[in-house]
Amino acid sequence: MTESTALKLWDDNPSLVDLLGFDAVVDPIVEATGTADVDPLAIGVHSPWGGGKSTVLNLLEKRLDTAGRYVVIRTDPWQYDNHDDVRGSLIAEVLDQLGSTFDSDATIKGRITDLVNRISWTRVGLALGKGALTMQWKPDELIAAFTPRGRSDGKSMAGFKDAFKALIDGLPDVDRVVVLVDDLDRCLPPAVMATLEGIKLFLAVPKMVFVVAADQEMVRDSIAVSLGETNRSGAFATRYLEKIVQLPVTLPRLATADAEAYIGLLLTRTEGATKAQLEALTKHCSSRRQEGLTPLLGDLGNLNWTPSQETLDLSAQLAEGLSSDRLANPRQIKRFLNAFGVRSMVAQARKVTITPSVLMKMLLLEDLHRTSFETLAATAKSERAALLSGWESWARGEEDSPRPEKISEESRHWAASKPSIADLELGLYLDLAASLLNVRAGEEASDAVIRLIGDLLGSSTAARAAALVKLAALSETEQRAAMEFALKQGRRLDDLDVLFEMTIQWADKTPSLVDLVIQAASELLHRLTTGTVVNMNGAELMAQYQPTIQRLARVDGIDSMVAEAARIEIESTNGH
Image (cartoon, rainbow, N blue to C red):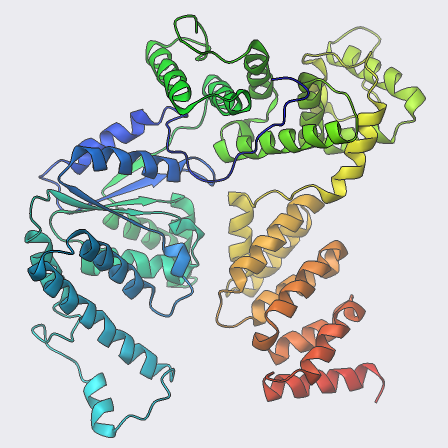
């Protein structure tokens, strides 16, 4: 890899190749799936956000597909958690994929059609109860739709589980049907409960296996929220989850050696490694991991292709430099490498010369010790060399070398790490980096922030207020990512009152976020409520919401009460 190489970027998609040594996790899951005396079986794959859960599902799906006698179904409740009937959507998706697998078997297709009809009738009742159907219904038809049905009735969910059991029993040449459930921890609490209920109440029959990939704490919190705020909700949530998931599997956090190898394997893309070459490197790492040898990408002489020494050095540098929380998170590592790639290309375009190892070190400073980076960038060019020299001397523990003013204590390890930059001319790069900070891609919300957003949008006034205080105390970059996540999740709610009440208060505390609130309000204009109008007009940043309020007063299709509230607020603002 050279300075002129156009670096590739890494997406957030789960890997189809085991770059993380997850074979040790996948093997027991495959073994458990084939164990006949635990039937039905639910397995939980647990890790925090970005820990590799979806990658494990990919590797598991690949293993089961090649093993034969398994039907593997992949589902993601997050894609439909704003539907009125999440439970029915999950069941219908399982049936649909079974139907596709056995499309040529008329008997199986007939049984599936019967089960789909049962779900359809429950949705008719749900839609009627919500007043969602506007066609003309006769009284006797309405009575028929709402009449409780017996287990033998083809329109009843009461007999669904028995009929589903018969369907699964009758599948030819199938030992197990394995349902892989991903992203459950991204769903809102009602969707989490509906998914678990769908599994437990309707689909948990012999020959069925469910592998649920989710952050266990997030799912437990969602169950507790669904139960309401009581002293027993937390304990009940734990028991509820334990009742459904018989085999919990926690993904290991990446050790430094694993992170170094993972980074090195990712960086081989920049050198044009083929799929076969990457797989050979992955097997080499797996073998050394089993033997307890480090570095995992060491002793590569027997391979036909090896990464450059520069790539190996960069991998070790980044693994040593990243903070422990990011080091253990594959997604965070990818995001840092993307920032590295983008910054490298921008520097090339601006004719700024900087070696990859120095660029890596400067990005670590910017990422981990932002205030110290800002101190360096704000220092006069003529004084930067002296600041860096004193900084490194202090970090090495040299006598009579105090910590420079406005430099954080936590930056000691960074300053002492290689390469030394005290004698380098970094003026052009620092000016470039400082100019890019305001347009840097925002970080995705962490697990802790996601929990705060859950409280922010929850039913407890006290919890919302406490969450707002904690969110407003984050760095501006973290707040922006958190606000984007809150607005993305909140728009799935039926009632947007709490969403805009809290985000408007949040933007009052951090004015740089107001553009996100205004943008979301514009996109959801026809769903805004009278409460949102009042909150906008009562905000400290009231003037910035006036264009939105004026649109509510005059745009066609706005609820009449909301439009009237907007006109009243406009008149009150104008002093009428």
